[in-house]
Image 1 (cartoon, rainbow, N blue to C red):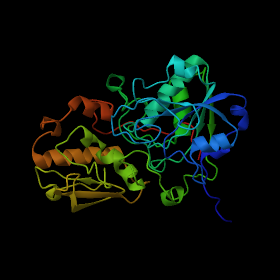
Image 2: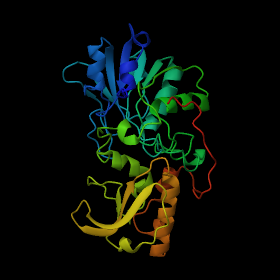
Image 3: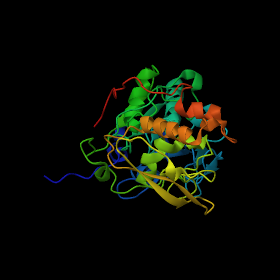
Image 4: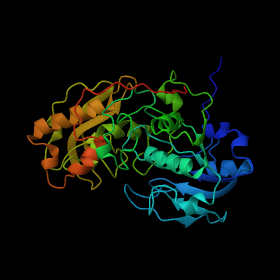
Length: 356
């Protein structure tokens, strides 16, 4: 029997969820139907009454850099506002909520706490629960959905916008599964939540079949390979002594340093990851010697475990803890981990309501 192509949950929405309602769409450039139409166009073509659009970090149009505040705008043709959930507010305000009866969240995520789209989902869920709004999550595959959850649980003392999901650092859930988990974990019984699963999606499929194509989810995640390596090297956002190819198409897939030859680094085995010494140009065009990473077996991959081993090996190689170097941000480093004590072993975590 021929395997049916995977379709986004956007194409499996129950029309009754949105019928005769003013609808707000949370989306970005990767929010696309199978035929390439953007989610906003797809919903309008289906007769959905869109009264507001919302963008997460990087914005509805995906043009903002990491940490860059995005301003509200207006759609040039449709006469509807485009609200930023990464500007003056991270959650919908009362005025924004007043424009809609129901939200559709259709965002391509990476199931890692440090990738902020799940934080946006949590804040949206809490706002909808408090205001009596319906929330529809149009599910999508996640690049880490074949990778077992890995890493420390969130310590509330270290919670921040790069850590709002009370689950392991890498939690392995699709947006729909994350919403179901958060509704239970946060006790949002009042939330009218609907999840539209992806037709044809299964965790028994190879990742390359799940993602025959990739749409950039943010300026640095332009390929599936960037997404897979993101949780392995994202900690160097707080430890700038180590370059991780930010500003190049190889972002998160390389490490190097202008101050040390990291190609001499002695690395332990990293299950599921091919790690090889390499040279690569950084964003300034300077050639750095370091390591190239490729996730070759998503099921064997343990991103947080590998990240902790990599950082430990670097500290041994350099003879100092990395946050001792100039420019380091220890507080941000703890927020990325979601704890001040990130060392393994970590408690086991099972996805509570798997959809696939």
